[in-house]
Image (spheres, one colour):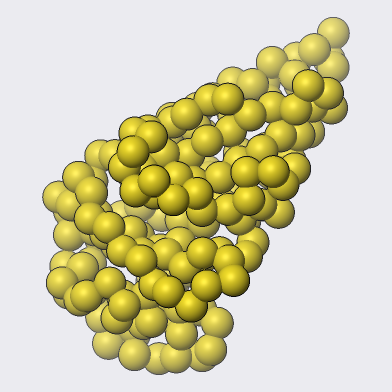
Length: 174
């Protein structure tokens, strides 16, 4: 098991299967936020897919900086983003530039283990609020972190998956 971040506060956990199918990088992936597992640690995924998805999540980091939304309480942050993504809510457009999409606030890695939960992030440039809803729960949970923890964890796991994928591609090409 590989842990990227702080186990007690925020981390991304991955583990390759014993037979991870080369470039597919089959394995498990989930978030751990304030002691809660977000995503299914038993669900198998293509970590190769996670690698490509993470790249776009990290690329959109600047879009997640919004001081007005950051000042909202956790439930309102979740509601304004979630409604814009899933229910055609338009309130968020009062607070974001037209070049930003509501989905830019999502840091959920859309692989099988994470599909039944929602995880959003917004920053004021110094701190980051992460709000989430676990699968089969109506409870909205929020936590505030130093900005580097969330982005550093995302970047670390991307680097690991990128290197692991490259090694497997090189093996296939030799």
